[in-house]
Length: 305
Length: 309
Image 1 (tube, rainbow over the protein chains, first blue to last red):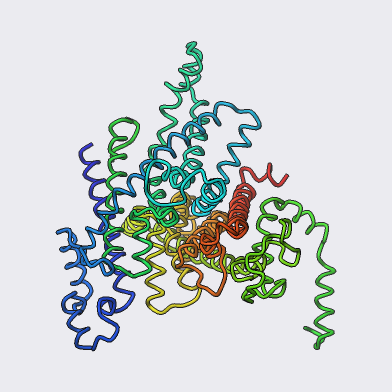
Image 2: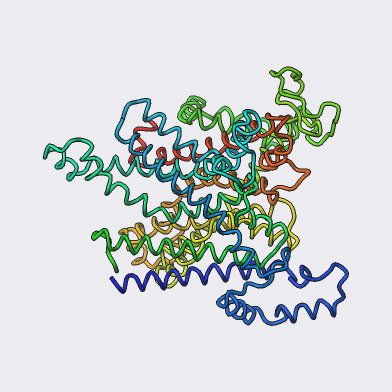
C-alpha cells in the first residue's frame, strides 16, 4: 500500500514536471520575450539589458532550471499586463472560479447520477430514447453556444435573469447550467451503463432473491458499485469544467482564472499563462492522486502494484 | 488514355463506368446511415463546393439591409433566407463559408492527430519498456491540463512565431488531441503483439518495421477509422471554440465560432445569428459522432452481422 502511494506520488510529480517543461518551452519558442517587456522603440542595447535581467540570454536548459527554482519559491515573474507578481494575479482569481466550478461539479454529479439511475431503472422506450438523445446532445452542443442561447432567452428576451457579472445567486444560474452541461450528460451516460451492468450481476440477483425491496437492492447493493467509474472519472470531469470556464467566464464576465487565461493568451502574458497552467495541473494531479489512493483503501479489488 | 486524345479518354472512362455493377453500389449506399450523413451533408457540400454555390458575396458589406431578420419573420425576404448580420452580409453565405473553415481544420486536424497518435501508439505498444513508459507519462501530462489551455497556448505561440492562416489551428488541435489516438492504438497493439502470427513473423526473420506494417497496422486500421470520425466532431468543437475566443479562424474569413462571438453585442436585435451558427456546429458534431458510432458497429466483426444485415 505504501509503495503504491509513493509510486503514484512519483508519477504525479513527473507529470507536473512534464507540464512545466511544455509550458516553458512553448513560451520560449514564440520568439524574443524581451520585446514584450520593452517599449516599441527600444534600442538593441535596451533589449539586451532586459534579456539579461530576464535571463533569456542564457542557454535554454539553464533558463529552465532558473525558472523551476523561481517557481518553487512561488515566483512566476511579473505579469506583463498587471505589473504585479503573476502568482498574485492568478490567486486573486481563484475563488471566483472555485465558486462557479464547485457548483457546476455538484450539479453535474447530482443531476447526472440521478438521471443515470432513472434511465437505468425505468427501461421504457421513451425513457431510453430520452436518455440517448440527451447523452448525444451533451456531446454535440458546445457549452459556449448553450451559454449564449441561455443568455439570449432568459436574460435578453425574458428578463428573468441578469446577463452577466458577479452578484447574488441569480447571477450564477446561467453560468452554472452551461458549465455543468457537459458533465451532466457525461455522468448520466456513465452511471446508466455502469448501473445496467451491475444490475445484471450475480450479487444483485442474490440480493433480490433474499427478498430485499427493490430500492434497497438498487441503493445498497447495485449503486455503490455502479458509482465506482463515476468517481474514477471525477478528475477528468474537473479538468473539463476548468477548461469550460475559459468560455463561460468570458461570456458571463465572471472574473475567474478561465477569463484570465483567455485574456493572458491574447496579450501573451507568459508569466500569468505559466502560473495558471502549472497551478491547475498541480491541483488536478493532486485531486486525481487523492481519488486513486482513497479508492485503493476503499476497494480491495484494486491491485496496488 | 490508350487511344490518345480527349475522345479516347472519354471512351476509357465510359467503358470503366459500364463495368461498375450499379446494383452493388446501390446496395453499398443503402447500408450507409441516413441521419448522420444528412447531418454532415451541409459541412461536406458547402465545404467542398464553397464559392461555386454562394448565393451572395460572403464579404460584401451592405449597410442598408444590416440585421435583416430571416425570411419567415416579418421584415425578412427570401433573397436572405436566414437574415443578415450587422454589416448586411448574408448569414446563409457566411455559414457556408464557415463550413469550409470547419471542414478544413477539422479534417486536417484529426488526420494529423491520428497520424501522430498512431505512430507514437504503435511504437509505445510494440516496443514497450522505456518507450512505453515515456509515452504514458506524456499522455498523463496532457490529461493533467484542461485541453483548451494547451490549445490556446500552442495557437498563440505559433501565431507569434509567424505562422499564419489555418495552419496553427490545425497543428494546435493535433497537438492537443493525439493522446486519445495514442491510448487506443497502444491498448490495441498490446493485445495484438502476442498473437501467434506476430510470433511466426518474428521466427521467419521479419524486421520490426515489417511486422508493424504488415501484421499490426492493418489490425488497428478499423480503430483509426472510427477515431477519425469521432475525432472530427471533437476537432470541429475545438475549432469553433478557438474561433469563438478570437484565436481561431481570423477575420475576414468566417467561422461559426466567430459568428457567435460577434453576435453577442447584437443579441438584443438579432437572435438569428447565434441560433443558426450554433445549430450548424451542433448538427455537424452530432453527425460526426453518430457516423463514428455507426462505423464502430459496422467495422466490428462481432456486430457486423447485425448492422450490415
